[in-house]
Amino acid sequence: MEPQKIVPHGEWVAARKKLLAREKEMSRARDALNAERRALPMELVEKDYVFDGPNGRASLADLFEGRRQLLIYHFMFDPEWENGCHGCTSFANSLPDLSELHKRETTLAMVSRAPFGKLAGYRQKMGWTVPWYSSFGSDFNYDFHVTLDENIAPIEINYRGKAEFEAAKGAWDQWGTELPGLSVFLRDEGRILHSYSTYARGLEPLVPVLHYLDLAPLGRQGS
Image (tube, rainbow, N blue to C red; front, side, top):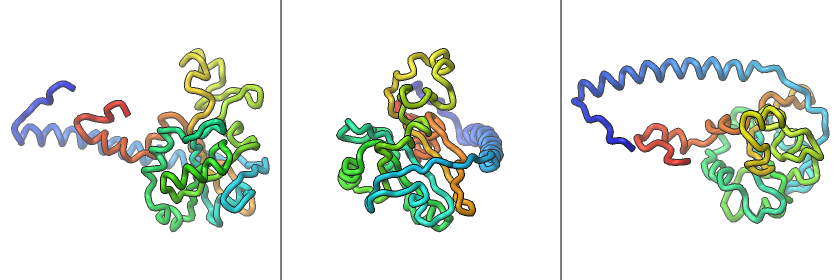
């Protein structure tokens, strides 16, 4: 890191106010983007997905726990792995008190492809309380493009098909076949609607530590 310029207080305030104006522009742009996200059209979830959880078999509707909204974090945990993905583990470690979401009719849960027994053991080891379900044996991970297997579903990575992705980024499987993501669902008059899914850097807003580091001179330091 290059040494920062050291200036008198008055010059520092002037520079800070210039940056503050840009920060306010970004805040307004973020508010507008959030409104556009909420206004996206939705699609009906027609497939009857089945998960394994602490109480046995569960439907997608069960994952809502009686609330109207459901956020699913697609936690990378291949059935062959003994431990969960390091980055996804950092995400789970940084989760807030979920009661604040619950007060707003929103449930957060994690879903992985590893069998539930592995997930339960890892959850206990890490001391987490967030609900965690296994999608092992179902199409859920493939349909939401967080497990990639072209024998089961066409390759799609962050809304790019295989050819488009490889033209821009290289081999489609360069990061493996398990990917993280977040999907959002709404219950409406007995129907389950899919409103939003995000991947790659779209997940950064979910990791508070990155935003704290962005405020500090040394930045993310490779995070």
